[in-house]
Amino acid sequence: MTVEKSIKTTGKKKSRKKKKPLTPVDKFKIETAKELGLWDKVKDIGWAGLSAAESGQIGGYMTRKMKQRRLNNLEEYSEARLKRGRKPPQ
Figure 1 (cartoon, rainbow, N blue to C red):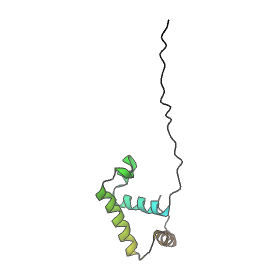
Figure 2 (cartoon, helix red, strand yellow):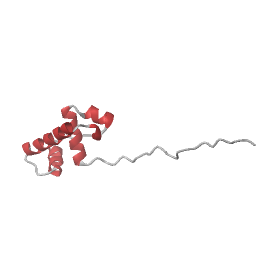
Figure 3 (cartoon, rainbow, N blue to C red):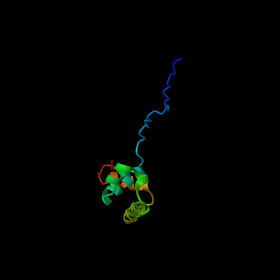
Figure 4 (spheres, one colour):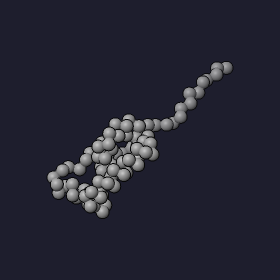
């Protein structure tokens, strides 16, 4: 009688998420992270890898930027950016 070893597979496949188009909020957040020097960390370990202080720094900087431009929301920010002839951040 031979004993057959069964090879157990986990059935896990690498998931390939479809990249969603970036929203104006995402673009603004990425632009801010680049300005604050946090973008490399975000690319390496993701947004969840940021500390609370770093996340707060990004949010505070975004708010300050919008207040300086006297904009009520991010849609107005995107429109103002396009009017100045600047491309949206990537």
